[in-house]
Length: 157
Length: 163
Image (cartoon, rainbow over all chains, first blue to last red; front, top):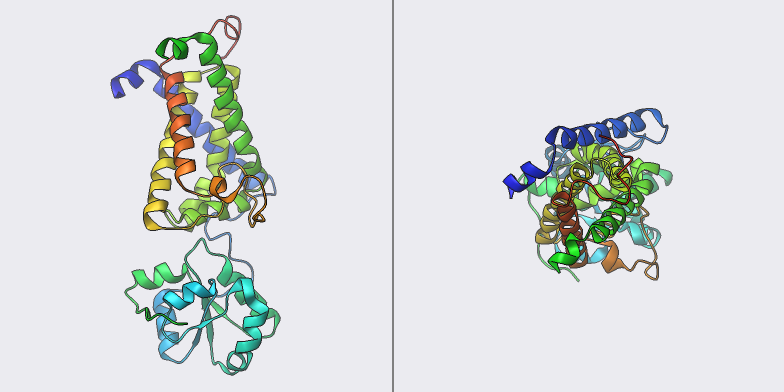
């Protein structure tokens, strides 16, 4: 197979296509006005406060309230110990239920299902609009699990 | 079947279809790099910074390779680039499916998020699953066929094309 490809294609042209495409992409991102900063998640906006998993565990031990921004069924299956469900898709109703606890909390950390999940960012911003400061668990539950931190997997109704 | 695929007109149609598909697939991503980055994040392969680099560079590689296929210039190398991309997509799709990650929109063509359930294409065509794997395998076969095809096609390249 490799011999067949080696005979059929000019590898310099092959590399040139890749390099030209990548260069155009980087130039477009830098100069078009449509680009974004490559060094951080595009989900992070001004005002977002991120906490890494080990810092999140320290906050949990100090009594911080954790909020699960995933759909409620995911929270029912497994969650960070002591966390409350506050799904982004059902924010207003869940917020009304949890508002007294949220206003009493010394610190709040919102999480969801990983760096591709925007829900924790959206929930933290909605809380901020209501005058409640909330940090976001950086890279969410996978980072929490990768750090060897505990999950509560007892099913909830 | 082999004779049909070796036919220069069939090769030409395959090349034009593949080129047009990859040019079309690149446009929405190029128009909105942050939206495409969010789509790449959903695959959860490699972390946000590598995903950013992929989101910025991949659409332009698709565009350059697609335009070269349409023009009939460097077509074997352009098809080989597309074959490489498709292999990467297939490996990533296998990883996503093995981990049970639900990707609502693969970002393959459109980067629009939160499409209503009634929208076209339906969710099983937008997400990462067996439809995507089958489609990419067919495209990979077409790309490899162009790689091994004749160096010159009579219809478009007798007087033109890049060296």
